[in-house]
Image (cartoon, rainbow, N blue to C red):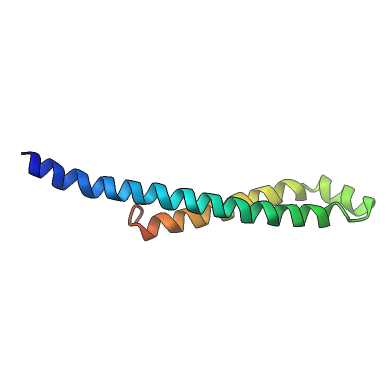
Length: 88
C-alpha cells in the first residue's frame, strides 16, 4: 500500500518542486527584464513633446504598455509550464 502511494506521490512532488523552482527563476528574470524595458520605454515616452504626449496619454498608450508587458510575462510563464508537461 505504501509503495503504491510513494510511487504516485514522489513524481508529483518532483514536478511540483521543479515547477516552483523554474517559476521563481522565470518570474525573477522576467521581472528584471520587463522593469528595465518599461523604464526605457517610459523615459522615451515622457521625453516626447508635451502636445504629442497629451494626445498619446488620452489614447491610453501608457496603459497599453502595461498590458503588453503583462501579456509577455504571462506568455513566457505558460511556455515554461508547457515544457514541464503541466499544460498540454
